[in-house]
Length: 92
Image 1 (cartoon, rainbow, N blue to C red):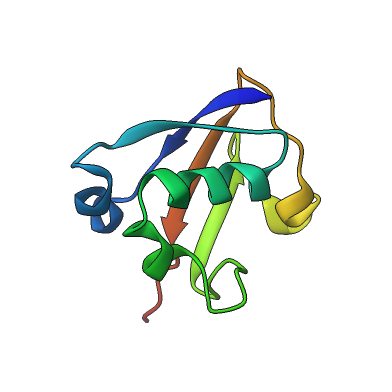
Image 2: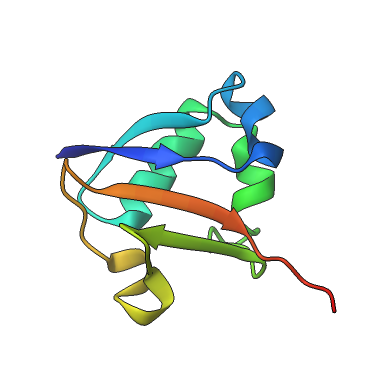
């Protein structure tokens, strides 16, 4: 199992002890997110919906590639990868 760096947006940092980058293990993005919320339970509300899926207005990237255009939560990760979590920005 790989340990990857996870970059958190400012709004989620208080639930992760103020850290902007944390480590989480997993073979896929879904594994990483499950391990992340296991370590920092306060992130669950901002990150996942009641079914355990990523919330509609949260974007996740692996090495700057949007997982929606890859294999979504099944996107594989390796130890050198960086997962970035970003809330969607709306407005006009």
